[in-house]
Image 1 (cartoon, rainbow, N blue to C red):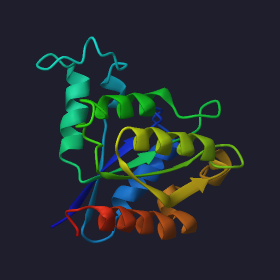
Image 2: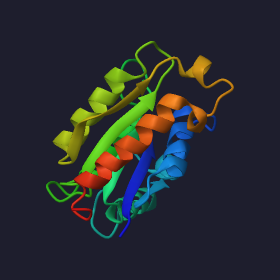
Image 3: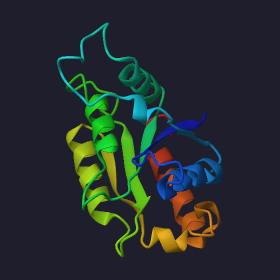
Length: 185
């Protein structure tokens, strides 16, 4: 049985290096791991408890929850915006944390990786994403980390799937997610 990992990318930009990193995860996934790149985060409205009503959840949020419900684990790709997590990624965590105590993230393994322009590769944003995931109930793999600095220069002519560090560490992180998944146990 294959472990299904839902990949959520915190950048909506078409040429995003984090999106390219997620594409690399799809291609580099080890045997027994399927990475599904979620495409609809731009369609998810900002979380508002007034619109999170059973039977009337906005279509974008309902689609995200449905995709998350089919996942065994989560891998978030976070750039760093002004020293913290991008709003689109935080919003996805908020929607997936509900209903309180029974959201799609509850008890499921998750890891956060990413790349950023700065010299630390988005470490602050990734730490914030891990914190939010943990509070939302996810089983965060705190030691599954990949923060790639200097993305604009490093990936100017090289796709992340061809980067030595990525091809070594990303499959290892996916294997960690798979082994932490009850389906794989």
